[in-house]
Image: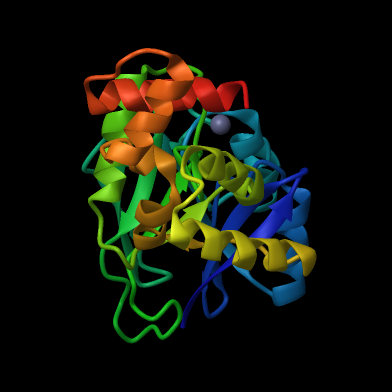
Length: 268
Ligand SMILES: [Zn+2]
């Protein structure tokens, strides 16, 4: 049975572990030790590593894991420095086959946070799998967070807006596996932009409770993010008005609203 679970790393990273029976794949292993610990505890074999972008907190564990698991395949964006010799370089539209898990993933180019950033999407995890209930899966690295989006370290606001628009077009029930537990701080910003969004109020309460209990707020879903995440709501009149008021200037295009929100959040 397919299962996805978080391995916490560093301050607030999640390394997502995808398993089926004793076969394991990890997404963005920034550190090897916490992954090794879970693999050993659960008697799992590491078959592959999926990398979304080149930042060290997403790739730092690759070499040490390869030393332990020399047959594990490493998938990474073709447009960025590969994390290890022999990595399989991926471009937009490529397919990643993980037969050990019975899982097929599609590669989506989502530049913005970094220029070569990719996401991995499974439109239909095998129906026999009960967890996560056959819903589509998205591993989006540092592109989309719950209530937020990645900082624009390399790309332009236009690139990031297009990348997020592509993700927002996925099915509402797509489970979104972000790489950082930033949700609570992100939602404080969303509340500053949209203080009267009822879905946001509900979600804020739920997230506060999860954090009190030390439970991850992830995965999220595309439907939820479209309802609460201001970076997916730049086309709405209320969000535009708030961005204009903060910017002190008229914002004509959705992308200008998005860019203003990103600047606002950078200083929030
Ligand atoms: Zn990053």
